[in-house]
Amino acid sequence: MSFYCGIRCRACMQAHDYRRLVAGWRTLARRSGFRMRAIARTGGYTVYGITTASPSAPAGGYVSAGIHGDEPAGVWALLRWAGKHRRRLASREWVLLPCLNPWGLVANSRHDARGRDLNRSFHLRHLPLVRGWRAFVGRRRFTPPAVILHEDYDGDGIYAYSIGGDPAMARRAISAAGRVIRPSLNPSVDRKWRQDGGLVRLPHGLKPIRGVEAREVLAGHAASVTSLETPSETALELRIRAHVAYLDAVLRNAAG
Image 1 (cartoon, helix red, strand yellow):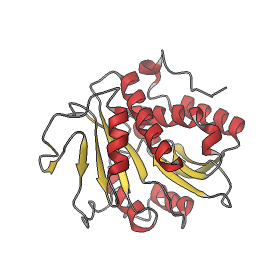
Image 2 (tube, rainbow, N blue to C red; image 1 turned 120 degrees about the horizontal axis):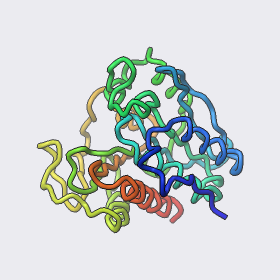
Image 3 (cartoon, rainbow, N blue to C red; image 1 turned 60 degrees about the horizontal axis):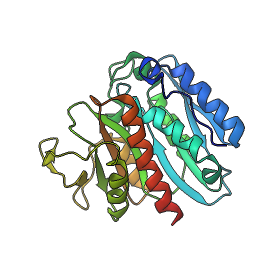
Image 4 (cartoon, rainbow, N blue to C red; image 1 turned 90 degrees about the vertical axis):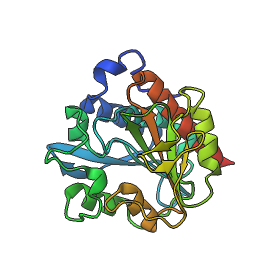
């Protein structure tokens, strides 16, 4: 029987409960044989990393969530998705980062305890989170496109940034998630990037903004990265389901 995190009816009340999130991952790791490791201590909270198989297993993918604490849907979606597919994930070494900014999650803040946007700080190697992340990821290379889960306060629908490699997987994943929340109808995002059907295809060779997590992943760990954005004004349960549908499509693509 698949493991689920049990938040379907109470998610809105408990979306920022980091202790409960950690307990859910501990239960899942124990049942599934995943390895759960403390990778950093920051803002009074421990940040964890998950590997789903031993380093000798074939390489899997990379999924992270919660670098912005006011974007909780991806955090809970990752737990739900990992529980849903725990047996399949255990056949390869996937790297999962359940919540990169626990202080921000608890405080419902984009920033960390010192007011930093961690998704603009990955070039600051002295930060405990960045130092721990680098040590945890090591020299791994991820075979499916790396995925980073985000939310957009101004979003009118789902969309995904895609950089590097073939965007076909991102298109399929957006199509799957679009059955839960329709893709954005805005012709552009951030007032500069054109989007079509929920896909923002960033120019080939473009370097993401300095300090962004995706830039570090691209630099040495993956040929392509996609970042899913769900509209944070939509009901939390729908946003969670959209993230799960997107990740389901990524996993199907990896297996196919």
